[in-house]
Length: 423
Image (cartoon, rainbow, N blue to C red; front, side):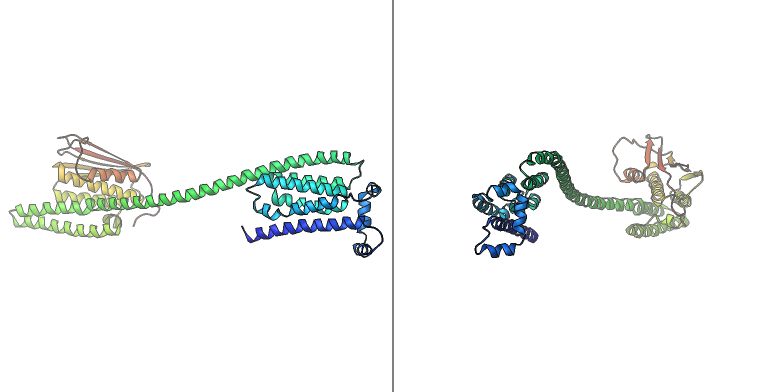
């Protein structure tokens, strides 16, 4: 309960009691004897009010001898009836039937008093604010209309009341129906707003859970990226380095041994550089200083020198600068495929083709090595890593191989130009 709500209850109770007191005093003055103390003084203080009340009541009221003798009892009942207004105001949303019944009895008492004297029109007007303060939204217009009927009919002559009631009914009924409809729409929108707020709260909770899941997925993706980086760079270079050291150990001629050791030193330096770069999560080092065709050309030449396998490189179409993730993927797939050829294929010839088209970039790596059965499960990260990299940029990767007949790896990735060309 707010501070304003508590003040409002007190205001309505005081207003109803005050209007009842004013009406009762005015009615008593209008019916009081013309002479004798203290009535002359009170009439003088009241001014023209008694004459106005007599004129408003009409000649029928004066001829009937003024106020009915029972009006003080009805006024006392009305005073008792308005007492629980503050209590009802606090419970208007939980005990609606009780509140509506109390309002109807109050209007009935006001109607009885206005029938006894037009002075009680002042008291009957309490129905206007109480209809808005106590009644449900759909009954507010009905309460206002009922109060207006009581007040208007009390001021009409006995002969005109039938016609007046007919006119009021013709106006009041549409007003009540309109009020019912408008209030119903208001309630419907209020319920809709409440459901919307509940949905927003639920969405906020769901969003928090999604953010947590995204964070966890990001951690897993980062772990996978680091594993891929290590496999694509450090692990491959270490394998090649070990091979060069073994070759140097088996070499009988000093110059041959020196060549293998130089290759091993170069692989060691490259592995260290790639390890540092992977920690910084930057692009493949060759792509930081060269365009993709140049980087793949250098990779192919270096690989052919270190493995001793002939490699035929072909680049078709018009090379264009691609988005960084796509160039990174193409370079890593080439690197991984060539590493697999060196480790497993025992090939004598290898072909590498990079084709630029308007819509797709095609990468093909073929060898005449031992081949394998793609449908059989295999240990290692290589093929799965390549597939995941290509899928991540919207591409597809196919591997065709037959034992004893070599292997072909084909990747197709959508052409997405870079915003700015690489230096």
